[in-house]
Length: 257
Ligand SMILES: NC(=O)c1ccc[n+]([C@@H]2O[C@H](COP(=O)([O-])OP(=O)(O)OC[C@H]3O[C@@H](n4cnc5c(N)ncnc54)[C@H](OP(=O)(O)O)[C@@H]3O)[C@@H](O)[C@H]2O)c1
Image 1 (cartoon, rainbow, N blue to C red):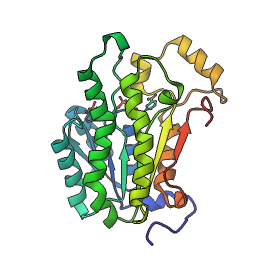
Image 2: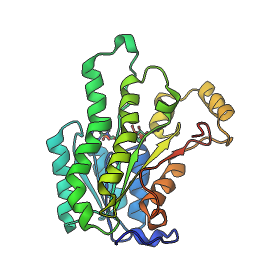
Image 3: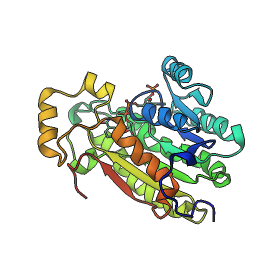
Image 4: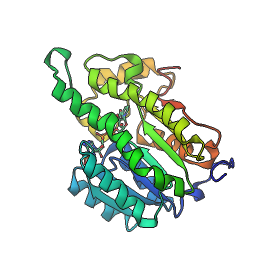
């Protein structure tokens, strides 16, 4: 069966294949897309910010394809996946990456905000996968990676909606791995700890946070996008041919499952 043959890790296998990544205009998704393009993949990525999307296309070149899409809107989301799928008639890799994490003190929260967070952070993963599945069956990469977080494992305060959605991705990943396993499609999850992206550094991380992280992590250095991308690529690759329904934590050894 295609995709079932184990292979030693090789950057070459991404060349010429089609990858779909949600939210490639910033942060972890942007780093992943840039890396996939540099490895020769055709990358279809989305976001709401057309300026950033076009800027990425200019930097990465002709194999990068930005499609403006609000993942809270199922029609736009399906159109994004369909455009990617129709490029070659197949999709090799799907990475559900995009998410929002607005501050949500519980006493100030309401169902409107809860629904918005869940629609982007969980429902879109379903809509994208549902729209991509026939294209994935026709592809040769046959791998899906969903981005989670360690935040729900730690039960951090003020994240009820975010963590409801993110813990939901665990069940989604496991069931989808069973649904698609018979087609040789592997579905897995990567759960980052606190990653020092541009946005996190600009909006959230304080000096005290840095000290606490370094105290709590087994590894005494802070993580950035470059620590997450290789793990995602590993799960997409043939080196992970025996792995399905799993959740790999990339947090410097703070949470140990
Ligand atoms: N950074 C961390 O410390 C950390 C920790 C744990 C887990 N994670 C997870 O890792 C993933 C990436 O996080 P990140 O830190 O890279 O986030 P980020 O820097 O905020 O980037 C989020 C990306 O998602 C896109 N996006 C957000 N809402 C969207 C929507 N409604 N429709 C379309 N695109 C949308 C954004 O594009 P536009 O702005 O153009 O819409 C952007 O490209 C997320 O699943 C996050 O939960 C991150």
